[in-house]
Length: 478
Image (cartoon, rainbow, N blue to C red; front, side, top):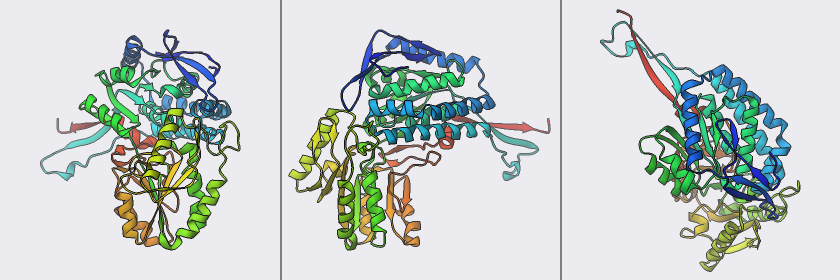
């Protein structure tokens, strides 16, 4: 594949297919046309689902083979980290250092899934647990659920695809990927790697197109047994309403918060928060959006935090010195510019930043923001963070929980007791102690509560949803 302004084909039934209709993919920093990606129509989507159905019924993909294929994918991704990283930087606007790190993380995700494939097993059920069972042997077996459909976002065009493809294949399921159109080149590059690694023909399909056409057709196809989606709560609700009783994993929005308590290492917290509030221009599901600082350390924290933010380099994502690259589009940069202006009109203040140049939005720190402002209540998905002050830890907990979202929260504190109590008190799916809310290890159970979604990612946890548990009872008296 090339990232030149050439035609990029879809990957359907192990073949590369050109369709005659295209979506143009641009460099998010300078507007250069990178490629024209073929888009799927009704015929191509049906071909993809039919191929997946056929291969699932006719082509065995045993666990040992899955292990070796996925390990080879991991190896190939590592070998191509520079090339794929540059593709992510160009089409996604992610700084090159972070883009290459995403490739290495993706390689690890496939490796984790490979090992899970080798140790799939059911469990023994104790027959003595209930009376009247007699001489019966009871156990469970695990089998693949069937066709999986993955609908993925632009912000991690490789690793969030990997978190769906790797566990699906490790569980023995064929998968159809519908990536974000504006970052589809990376997903198609992954298909190249999967093909080279020896994934059986038809076990991976990649179809590009809009949610209103390709997405809707996939949602309404009864042959698909499970959907895994990362994106907005609005689309997540629509998916759940459309697919009925079929399984779904939803990783949705967030306005994640981090608490800096009075006993925290303020300097350490300020340095890390300044980095993670603006990583990938704030376009991360668990990006630091809200910071709550105890009033006794407010001055020290603000001085250190703003100093670190002022040093962040904004510009070309291909420059290794760049910390903050462009947002995914000028439209999105204009949106957050309007949100910040609205917050200021409502009484908030911009401590630093607030400037836009095309799709670049400079790291912005807001003080005096409050409930009712979009920059507090909604997911900003931009390089904007708001800071508020609290007096008691109970107040901080209430501020974190006063949200329709609940993905992750970070807490800086030296109190061992507080560190162990807070996971029971914060209404989130993950509590990160002495680090920011923007932490994820690829093997951990990742997912939120409330409007942040349903289910968990991480290969082992995703695979649990992608397998059917079959109960087996053997009457030994017959």
